[in-house]
Image (cartoon, rainbow, N blue to C red):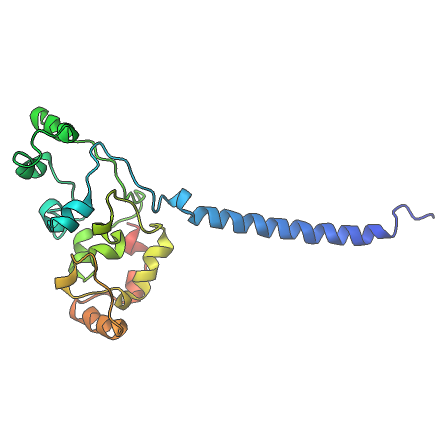
Length: 219
């Protein structure tokens, strides 16, 4: 019986299998890279707001404490968005006639809250409690970055589960003294792991097994 396929077909078939496998691996790798990209996660993308509030100016230049505006951060699961009344505590006296702040004054007159755009938006199936993290020695800048360098607020992390687990697996690498919680420029010392282990015990931080349990964040 004569040979139907040329002898080179064997080599071509093997090559096609190898190329197909490489393309599949490349496609998966590309999807993983895109999934973690800033384009997909929104990290380092300035969010436009109805009023371009500058943390750099208020928190950095003027030195207003985080808790003056985010009053619930130590007692609630949410840090809280300040009401217009908080803004007007100062802006009835400072820049009181500035056209730039007209949306704030309109909100004050109409008693309608400003429609701020959420920046850090976790999925509904993720439970996160600000007060617990603050109580356990996690500082603002650990998750939000150095706010006094942000004229416009943006994410500095992907907010993906793997990012959360990095801290939950080894919280001692991120814990800081409570008097440094609101210090946006705090940097871990050279012996952070040693200090962190001591703080972990002092603050009664749960074990890594508990912190990485599914039910801790997915309730």
